[in-house]
Amino acid sequence: MTSESFKNALKAWQDILGEDYVELRFESLAKAATATFSTNRQIPAILRPFAREEIQDCIKIANRYKVPIYPVSTGKNWGNGSSVPSADNCVVMHLGRMNRIADLDPKQACVTIEPGVTQGQLASFLSESKAGLWLDVTGASPSTSIIGNIMERGVGYSAYGNRASQVCRMEVVLPNGEFIVTGFGKYANAQAGLVYQWGLGPSLDGLFTQSNLGIVTRLTLWLMPEPEAIECFYFSSKEEKKLEEIINALQPLRLRGVLQSGIHIANKYKVLNAYFQYPWELTEGRAPLPVEVLEELSKVVGSGEWNGSGAFYGTRRQIKESKRLLRNALNSKVDRLSFVNDRHLAIVKRYPEIVGKLLNINLSAMLPVIKALDGMQKGIPSEVTMSTVYWRKKQRVPEIKDPDMDRCGLIWYSPVAPLDGMHAMNMYEIAKKIMLVYAFEPLISFAFMTERALCCVIAIVYDRDVEGEDARAMQCHYEIVSALSDLGYYPYRLGIQNMMHVLPGDQNYLKLIQCIKHTLDPNNILSPNRYEF
Image (cartoon, rainbow, N blue to C red; front, side):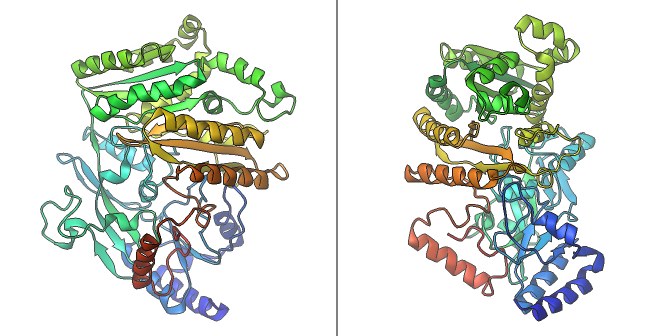
């Protein structure tokens, strides 16, 4: 784009949105261009539309003057780029003002939301509605966008954790400014528009996740009915090699539907990351975390080499039988298996010191995390996990957290494999070895994505204020990407740091995507480079 074309586009956007919603201040632009790793993107402006029609007008202006647009929901995609565009000189379109909640249907357990609706906002809305419905939440902050996460096919904690599969009737603005509704939405009087995903004819919904083919301005989200009872479970194993046996024991239960919630299994490093900041005073400035300090702190919180959690939902009789099956499956494979319901949690909250002494652990230190995990299984998002990105910072975790501006270093990578213990160990051993070579703690966990798929969640967490750490962390990241890709372990989502670094795969697939992109977006206006393999 030329400076003249940008000026003309800017004037046209101001006429549409008003000058207050076309952001040009240096501080705001610099913040939008800052992530939890080193970036060098220039952002010339930020647009803040309020309605779908304004988005359409802005897109048409962008096409007229050939100015690229990069939409974000709330811009809190920490570890994968935050609000930083996938190409230089894109105008960021921030959709945070579009935060309306509509069409709550308690009987069919669904609700329609816009991109600016956050986890915390919808959770509060559902609680106040007394409809007996729960939102599936991720481990991210309550201030993060639901649609933003769904567009990356994110995974949560509950039985509805495969979030992209719980979506219906997307309203989408195309790169040429036109507007469509997917599924039965093409029929104005469709009775099943909010309850049947596919509609009639080719299904288009998948085209708009992990792509640059449209801007989703609304969608209908299916919600989880509150069960008669819920009971969380926690297990741990003292042996690192037991991971393979544990996953293979749980896999049949997940496939048969005994385990319905998301199952998360974290290594010892990841557990400590949830409870503490890096103990610089104990390590005398050394990194990565010395083994003796790792073991000492692990005893404080009762952490094993592997530590898992999940939940049972249903009637009390159903949960009783599920607990029996889980005990049998994990017998001899874990050293501790505990079940926690609301009554147990109330006792722990009231007498943490007494219960902690009985269990020989510092329960007072663990209580915030335990409460957060319990809440996330019930559709209540938490800020507790936000502290984990401050792991290597020498300053205390601030009350108001802003990982980007606080210069927290965080890079995520999440390869996927069959739900099989052998694959889990393969991914774990490769990632752990590389991270320790680069002097980063191997903060690694596993999540059961579906009945058949397993995700390895790898977090490189560091302090961006330490000279050279940005470059070292990214080099470590790319080595992990290369090593795992060589073995066929590809990620379920990409950050902007990876958009041009993942192998393209089948060329016919690539040609089809490029054909669709060129047809819908001949000027390459919408999110250039985003998921363009």
